[in-house]
Length: 303
Image 1 (spheres, one colour):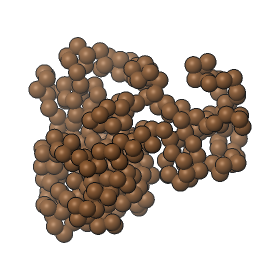
Image 2: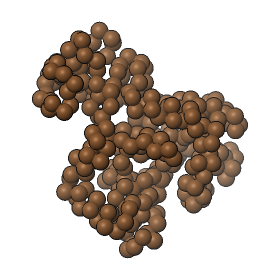
Image 3: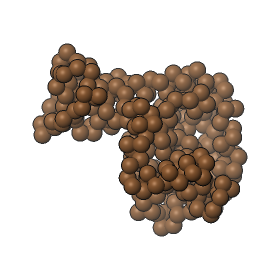
Image 4: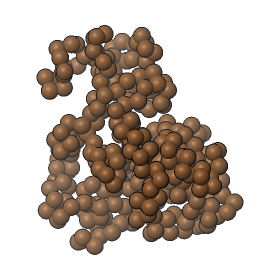
């Protein structure tokens, strides 16, 4: 293993790997780096350093990666989608908010929360909901898409309330906020477990996670197959096959998203919290949210 700095300014920790013909565009040699923090965008990405005449390509969930202030293709696609849909973002996502925000408001009241951080804040809907139920609360939202921040600022949020940032590397000290929350943001993040770990680090009293459960989506037969594949540890391979090697899907209603289940991070949440509560819609059958609910709310209390 060698540590060095590329001519374009990236820190590269290299180790040799074998690559298949399907993953190469030519026969140029490749070296896979360890996960490093890229300057400029603050995201940890495994990179591929190839020969000088071949561009950098990312292997994490597919798609290209560049360094020193550049953006991955996935990030560019996400930013373009939000720039196009920013004006209709709130209306398009209104279905997500009713019950989840009621639970969220109840949690803030129960904990007498004086501060809250929302990651992947979008136009700041969670911040506005928090301030409506607790007017004196210190509410901060981290949102990397500038088009969505502009919309949030236009709704009355201050520039110091809805800010730029990376959920995978939060620029806050440990235990900085009473509650840290997210609403349907984790399935847009390539490394959601890193973001959840950051949420747990920054939270003083609780985390509130409302997101998708891919294993509870689809027909009863489809759910059973996905749950079996997941139990066998083959879901990453199945996901690559489903997405034709990209590791993500793009839809008109949700933009670029990754396959994700909130239950993937349950062990991590349990390890940091004294008690954990799960809320899900099991109308599809049974009483287990993991098996039947297309999404779920997880509340982890640290005290």
